[in-house]
Image (cartoon, rainbow, N blue to C red; front, side, top):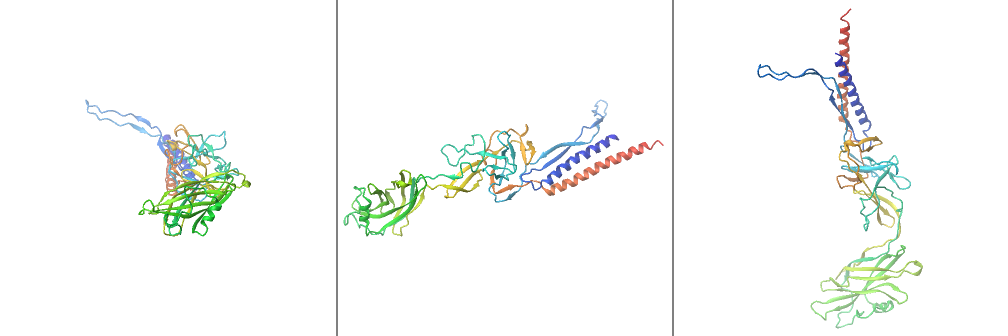
Length: 456
């Protein structure tokens, strides 16, 4: 009779533990990145009243099963369920959610140990460190692979991500190339042919001074293209590139005449009065055949405080048809210095800064951790986990979207995976289980009372 009472007590204890876990789940229904718990039970060792007996074939007697009385229940496991929670959109650039497996890596200082979390409600401190609400640094990489401007060396040790240090401004970059695309109007007036009228400019002579060029093109139809270049210090210069039809040559093959254009810039060497100039040639189909690339040496004024630099001019995408001239500088590199205006985080974890000069630059990459058995991680509070002997070791950080971890969803947060309908159902069954076990105790007590009352 006492066994039934102790069984009831074990049932009360086990169901109380289950109710504790349910209460914790419901309390964290709105906790970012929270993973709910689950309690399972197991029976306690049973007392054997009589062992099993095998059948006897000689006597014909049958076998008997063991007789056992159970001694109650105990908690078998308290599991952490790492199912994915729903995503909540916040549009905060530092809020991150993981689409798939993996954990963010944080640490509370250089001497602290790594902790791991699914809660991506991060922010910036005044120094530009990416931190969680408790001030723990978010870890990743800030060292690019040699020769790359966007790809990070994930084999390097993890480091705390800082958005501002050395990145508040971006240095100026001098122009090294200018790509031109568009059409030169074939109907522009110029020499009719090499037979009837000489070329404006002799491509076997030269170079021409800027004064001579202006004299030759005086009264002729030209097409001008302005474009902007920058020196090493970020000084801005507007250059005008001018095209003039030079000659239509049909002496080699009258059936396949070619048209040659002369081009020049208005930037000249003050000491020689000579600037960049050259020729481009088109076939009878309007396709460029010669002069696809050229080079100019830009000479900044003395007060600019920097030296001259070469600029490659790319004319390979020019055409010549009878339609309006449309040549434009479509791709001119180089830019002035700029200040960091904003930043965004991509699904691959790369943090990209946007600067006031319109340029973008990689600022760092958020790293993720992967564990073979996430359920084996140990909760340490504040939405954080640490590894255990059954979770697998943390070996290195992983780039989002590779090696088994998911990609990032910027501007969103992973919410709690607690299912309230399930928790309330579990609460009801737990309450009934607790109630039933309490009845076992009271009934056993009444039976003991009756036993005591036998002697009066």
